[in-house]
Amino acid sequence: MNTDLSPEYQALSDTVRDFADTVVAPVAARHDTEHSFPYEVVSQMADLGLFGLPFPKELGGQGSDYFALCLAVEQLGRVDQSVAVTLEAGLGLGAMPVFRFGTQEQKEEWIPQLASGRVLAAFGLTEADAGSDAAATKTTAELRDGEWVINGTKQFITNSGTDITRLVTVTAVTGTREGRDGAPRSELSAILVPVPAAGFTAGPSYDKVGWHASDTHPLTLDEVRVPEANLLGERGRGFANFVETLDAGRIAVAALAVGAAQGCLDEAARYAAERNVFGRSIGSNQSIAFMIARMQARVHTARLAYYDAASKMIAGKPFKVEASIAKLVGGEAAMDNARDATQIFGGYGFLNEYRVARHYRDSKILEIGEGTSEVQLMVIARRFGF
Image 1 (tube, rainbow, N blue to C red):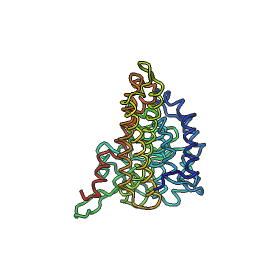
Image 2: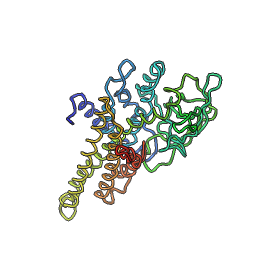
Image 3: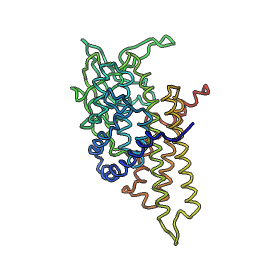
Image 4: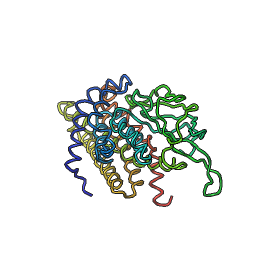
């Protein structure tokens, strides 16, 4: 596999890297401290066309592909994971289900808006008892007089409560079907909920360990009514379609994790060269030099994993296992590099003003969100029949 980026991909990566360093990085600490959503940064990301990267030009996109999105997410993740996940979730989870499974009318209504970056969409899957076990969803949608009437709650929903959130796709039980064993099974469907909507409430923001500038809320849907035509995809295919969405989303999360791991490596290598103790740089100590070498090895391995998964996805080949491998390896690389970078920084690494401290807090969710590491291991193990 040739891992050299094409001139077009390299130009995109360089552009986003420069944007991350000059626009995102200077305000990241402030938004993290204030727990504030970076509207001014998101607006400039919209101006760059980042929210339209994988969509065709006839729908207002940039005419590129999913790998381009991953490259952008990686570069943003180096300096601010909150900003990176805002892009990843807004596209990979918010807009892509509409693009993949929506009717032509739904695509023409929503994709140009979402590709512009002026509005955001969210992915309403997780519930208190339905995260890894999405089939345990309790939210219901009943068809009454040509409308879906939705009742239930969702939690941990990214981009669901911003001032520019205009769409939340929710999974809901729309009936029952006979399972393969003859027993009744919940019929899970996906439904588009434009917001604001009567009965739709985004609860207070979570007080999170990390990703402080990322918007995350619990949601309540109380007799929310939307037209029957807002069904996304085939009725009863909501679970299957959202699993497919998550498979692709894991590649983008892996790219975010690689960016975080790279950011920790960059910071640690710089600090180790500059910090002098007992008359010499700490990087001249073999223990520190070897720690940085291992950080580089993790970054390299994790990047290869997500490049491989993305290449298979774009080529139309099966990529489920490769996406899980990339997510697993990337999440572990980000967490391990954050821990090592914090150790290299010593006491300074424990201060929130330093980027490595933010990465230390932020990176843990990369082993949890969009499928825990244990779920990824389950997916990989199934290839062997276990």
